[in-house]
Length: 136
Image 1: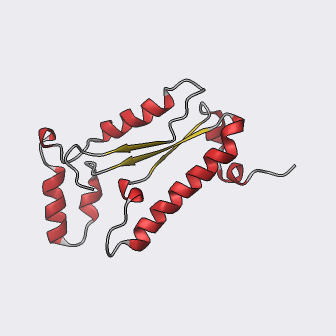
Image 2: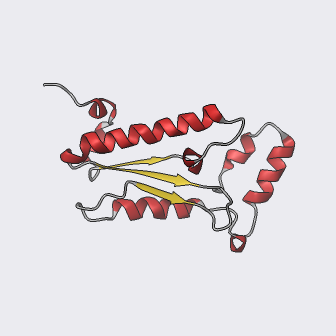
Image 3: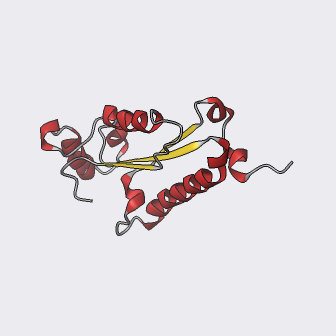
């Protein structure tokens, strides 16, 4: 019996977890910025893999969803080595929610739950979640 390429990479948990494969990849997988072609390219690759998974596994009851968040409050800002860039991003991360500049992790969790909670005949293949005021 020949295995489908996607099932070789699927963890066993996906096959019993309601038939739903989720992947979180940044909103930059939808755009390309100067000086970040390699980074953006890796994010495009994730999109291609997820689309391949969707096509290979749709007849086996497995739905796949890409959730692409924009700016989200995380501790990632603490890993930035350039202090000027870190300061600017920290300011963004600390912005009041009413300014619409940054999302909370709960916002992304809600998007994931939305995709999972659909009836079996509905596949949410992609969700792009951005802060209301995010430019790109």
